[in-house]
Image (cartoon, rainbow over all chains, first blue to last red; front, side, top):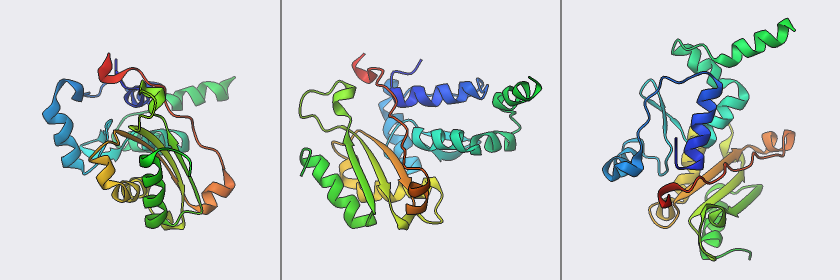
Length: 94
Length: 106
């Protein structure tokens, strides 16, 4: 359970897509990681989202990807079927 | 102008770097437990032709670059909405910021 509203937004979005199998690292527990990951990605803030080892962006970018359908596509490329696709199917059946 | 010194700096640097057609700078520090006058958490909405053809990641990097010194210093969190003028015209809305969950103060 994240302590930061922005990180929680990321968790909630992933949950909406049915993605529960991901690694999360709490930078509040690890000051070296907190600075190190900012150096690594050349990105100044936390949370940072990586898909298949590739830096995707922060909470704002993930939210927009979720809203415009890009996240469903990116998950598909990783072999992950978004739960939202099944939700849409249920909608169509009704 | 409105806001404290950091708000004014953010506005000035983003204006100089990106020549926005529309710019909103919002101090969210009070919503994250900051004392009066705190300038640690900001949200910016930047509408600029400079973003045309750029994916979101590159747009955000442009914003960060303009505020590099501040982000290495007192600016702890920065929400970014980066749109082209065409995008802004077709949808002049921005999502609300996520609520604070207390962070390291908990």
